[in-house]
Length: 132
Image 1 (cartoon, rainbow, N blue to C red):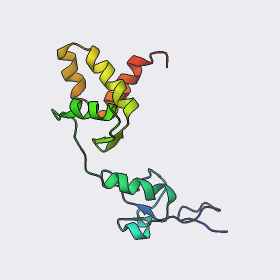
Image 2: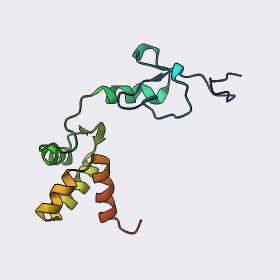
Image 3: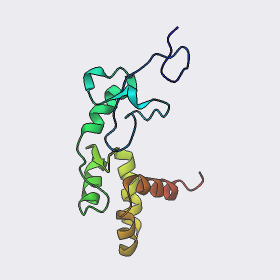
């Protein structure tokens, strides 16, 4: 029976890809020692990290507070996937953010546009689905 470095039996000892924006692996596994995290893509054996490492390596199209942010969200709403603040934004999330953004008055729009993309999405979904 195989054991990983954390001592759990039955789990293979995966090597994970290093995340660029935070400590630890790109897949978000929290119980991995840093000795099992590598920057070399050829050594990665974690099935979750393999696809996420390519996405993590993509450059950001915009960051929070960027004047082009709403323009990029409109492109994402049309079907073009965009990476904003290190997060891939799909068409559904972009449409939710823009629905709320377009309904706001200009001073409030500026406040929403200044938020990080994950906070914008959270606010948009709370407004559009208030019962949750």
